[in-house]
Image (cartoon, rainbow, N blue to C red; front, side, top):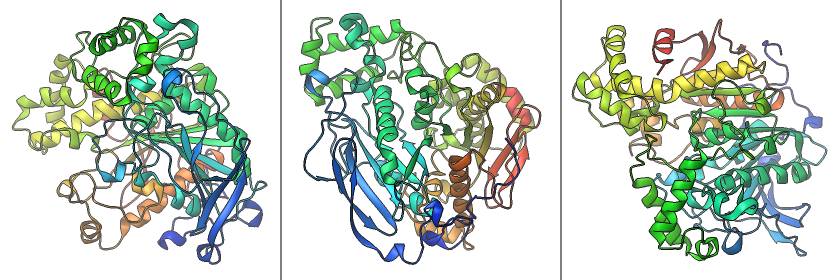
Amino acid sequence: MADAPIDNSIAPSRSGSNIRPSGLGAADGAVDGTSATQSHGSRVIETVNGKLQGTVAGGVAAFKGIPYGQSTAGRNRFLPPQPPKPWANLRDATVLGNPCVQSNPDLPVWLDPMPGSEDCLVLNVWAPEQARPASKLAVMVWIHGGGYTFGSGGAPLYDCSNLAAIGNVVTVSLNHRLQAFGFTDLSAAGGEAYAGSGNAGLLDIVAALEWVRANIEAFGGDPDNVTLFGQSGGGAKISTLMAMPVATGLFHRAIVQSGSVFRYRGRAEAEAMTNRMFSILGLARNDISALQAVPADILLKCGDQIMSEASGTGHPPIKYAPVIDGQYLPEIPWLMGAPESAKNIPLLLGANDDETVLYLPRRVPDDTAITRVVVDATTVYTPHEDRVAELIPSYRRMLPELSSTELAVRISTDIGFWKNAVRQAEMQANAGAAVYMYRCDWKTPCCKGVWAPHGVELPFVMGHKQYDTAWDGTDTEAARAAADPDNARFGLGDRMLAAWVNFARNGNPSLPDLAWPQYDQKTRATMIFDHETKVANDPRGDVRTLVSAI
């Protein structure tokens, strides 16, 4: 695939929400920035299960709370998702559906306003107002973060309406089962019927993608041009879906934002967790019917307790994760190379410059404290404590100007996020797929304006020009305006969104004025997103080499 700028890309602009794709004609289903923003009303779409009535406003047709599966409560708990039942009457699709039952520690911008429920197999669709079945627009499906234990596609920050309008794409977000509801392995007790129970949450996403394939054309989308994009746990889920044979052909490109996380459970570990669940709940071991009757809030608390306990197996305490079950997830993905089912999937991936700053103490007193801090902050990656300690003198020689706190952030980010992103990029590129690497360096005004923490890129990718207090509570619109008087971040946000959309359209994220070369192990070309967006070859190659063996 050529690396030159593409013709039908969208040009970044400072015109805010009225940005429209350049080079797109009516045949492309382009949104008319003048008439579309004046239109308000409703729209009816017919799906394979029945008719939906959504809203039209701001140039976007929105359909919310669409069921792609039946309730997972009662006898459906732990079983594969069941197709939704058809409905005869017009179904209201103006209100978000429920997220999975969960304990969510996030701030309001990441919190779904709807209550948790086991009837959570729902999705939302946003399409440009003028999109019609013949439009064949690129489809972008958002997979939310929160690891495998919390989060929701209905969170305010994940509203994809701006992305649909600005990017002229059809966007989808979804909810699925989490924590014990989505990742309790009952295969040993329940046999074939429960063979997928340890990966039920991922099978939910597969069912949602099957719904997209069957229905998205009615909304103006192209079922043969679907891109998954997700951050943190969402990116990890995408990486795992790339290794699942049942997901083959349901999506065609992947964007992994700070989500190159390769944490999986073997059958023995998963079974031990399940046995612990029966013990905590006081149920006879392997009594699945009794487990299905446990109230959802009690099951959630049980899952919380299991996650809080020391594993005693050398694994990190974040216990709920996909299971290598030999069927839905045949082998450990991304161990020695790209999964076979992933080899033809173009991949855009990367991380932020200071991912771990919010997980570390506000002050690390000296270099002797760095080892423990780094190990605690990167527990999901199980770094060996001795190996981390060996890194510190080398880092200190390379970066003598950093404080101990800054050095701890640097080392833990490199180990916890950048190392695995590079590793995944290498494996996918070696498999022959087109790979594009990025790093977001933009420093948010929160945390005294010196960090680019986990999730800082989300408002840019989603097309949000304003959002409420986030991160440490000081990242307000006024603070951002004061720190960025020239509104350079608007230009940065436009460029990130444009690159994401271009990649979704045709697999090349290049901008009209800036080619984005493919990643390979010779040049390691990486797009750096900051006040000045540019390509750098092998950025911080010295530390990349240093942490590669950790």
